[in-house]
Length: 469
Image (cartoon, rainbow, N blue to C red; front, side):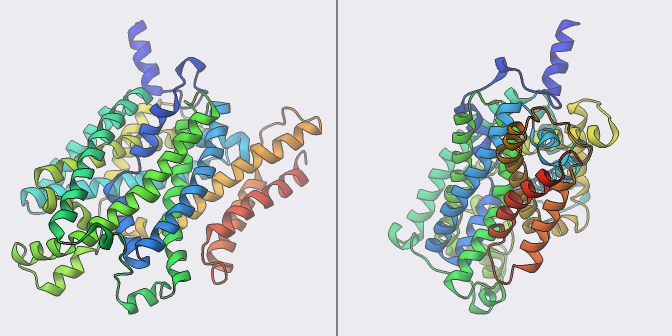
């Protein structure tokens, strides 16, 4: 009975309660996860997209800015999680949104992470089809997606320690294979290392103009807007993982290294490999796929699928191992964070607490449903919107913890009651998002430059003016 109880506790993993002090971890163990969740094929594709639109130099400058901002936001959210021991969705109840109001964060964040879970599954599926030369059939989908879903459930079921172990092993293997691939691709491309690290925008002028990226300022804004979406989600992941930190410094370092991995390492590697290897990719599609030169060039960067194909073309079995390592660790972490969000969501709305393991399964089933029809295309079209929302969530929670709560304590309100719905947080979220995405976007092209400051400034004004009323 005692052993069964221990297994149940590991599976539940303190989803709705504070993590005990004796289960806290150092920065290195947490970094396996913050870096592991972002070193994926989708982030390599984003890196290639950003650098092909902006050029490698402007892309790196945008990556540096987002790394700094993302690390600070992640540290702020992670510090709150470290202090409270709670996941992002649960800690938002007392810090910004209220008990039932926190369902907004849990819903948006959960949808975003489950969407990433579905996207990464689709990339793995396309990679397997490409490697084995299989047709895209109902049977192939059922078998491959079924195996992947079962794998993520089993690897995530036993909580943070299992997630950390999978991430650490997979991340080391991924980085080693990735280093080999970069050296091999550049060596066989016939280009020098210096030329590969100096390429400019690769998109046609008409395409750049359509994206608003026909000037250096436009290219920089485009790059930042694309990168900040993932950084906002990572800040909430930092909170989910920061509840296990021993000190604020531990989660601060983990947040920093996670953002470096995402916005610099993946950006540079994705851009360099696709640029240096473009000739080989096009030649492969022409000789093996029977495509015309123009069609092969168009296919090379049309979707994240091209990244999976590229690494298989370059590396064969090694490239396939890279693909599996890159995706497996991220999928375990995506499943973990999405199960925490769904647990908090159902608790906040329905007071239903079946245990986190139930939502590990539910998250993967929803991800499978998102693979049907054009749902993933719909999800991808919302990524910029979701990125703005997640930065707003983090900004409001940081503002509540570091500004509102100290002022309330100075006024003698040491334990103010948690409202059912904190309308100050909800209103701030709506105002910040609408102004950033619809009203001021023509003037301030980098949208989180609007949404984040408004979230941090407006929330304390509304909350302190209405608290106790």
